[in-house]
Length: 170
View 1 (cartoon, helix red, strand yellow):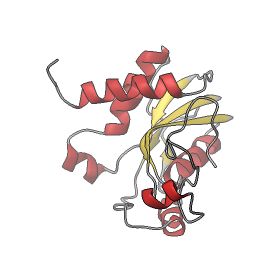
View 2 (view 1 turned 90 degrees about the vertical axis):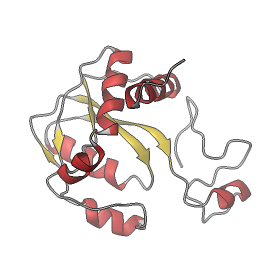
View 3 (view 1 turned 30 degrees about the vertical axis):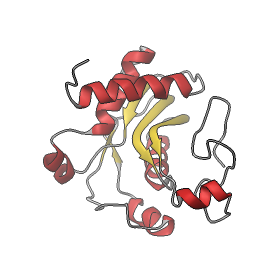
View 4 (view 1 turned 180 degrees about the vertical axis):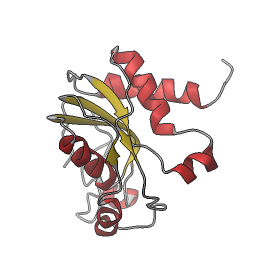
């Protein structure tokens, strides 16, 4: 099979996201938007591509509900508290949100970005926000494997960083 770019990757990841997510009714699918500068650098918004593919799989409309007027900079080297401060008021709603929203992001690390988006969507009218992420970052993979309480996802067993249907993040 020939690789034709990020749309193929988004479609494959969306299949996995939908297959492993608990079924949840939704009125729309939306995404965590990139800041303008990051979008210009990258040339595409990976979360938007994932949301489009998820929406197709679920047969739910994909609607832009958020914009990111604040360029928060890369979050990768920040700790949880610093991420939460950076994300505070980093998003604004571009229209009223329907009651049930699926919010799509590429990577969930501390949850600060998803939380800030969900809070904005709730203020815009959403009663329920479900987050779907393509990947879950683990702060210390070896600590997670050892079951260390310092791990971002301290679940032990053969698949410490994998969430399966019915699992709930700890």
